[in-house]
Image 1 (tube, rainbow, N blue to C red):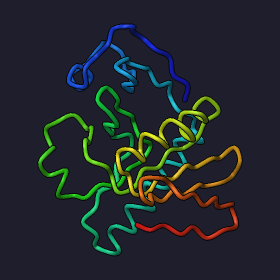
Image 2 (cartoon, helix red, strand yellow; image 1 turned 45 degrees about the vertical axis):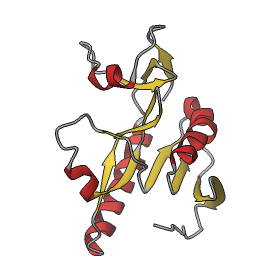
Image 3 (cartoon, rainbow, N blue to C red; image 1 turned 180 degrees about the horizontal axis):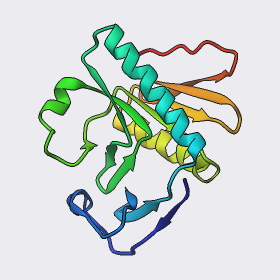
Length: 174
């Protein structure tokens, strides 16, 4: 997904939550500016669909009080909100937010981002630091280009990373 800025106007988080235009565009809020997210590739969609189904199955099998969401918003700062590819949140937290925009202001237990050529720096650098500062305990970076999954576990405010290749068995704290 590449992104392009649509406005120089600085938006508050509240403006962002209430923003609407006539398009089907999806936006992230980056330092108070609306940034349009281009549609993902079919490969990206298939990876997200597979992982969402896998997480949903694990949640059901283990009867965990968790929910997996695709493309939910995650507020990462005063004038920042990202659209995660997948995130896992405690079900009881969502109970109070049912009628609000699908943007959480508390850290999800796990966030997954799927890398595209245009999102490499955003996923590996910017989102990594924003999610760590927010306190996201576990962050996965799925990189279909390099055929790796990087699992980042929060330890004392910084991520410890383990890179997995296609033949490796993943180890998730969650």
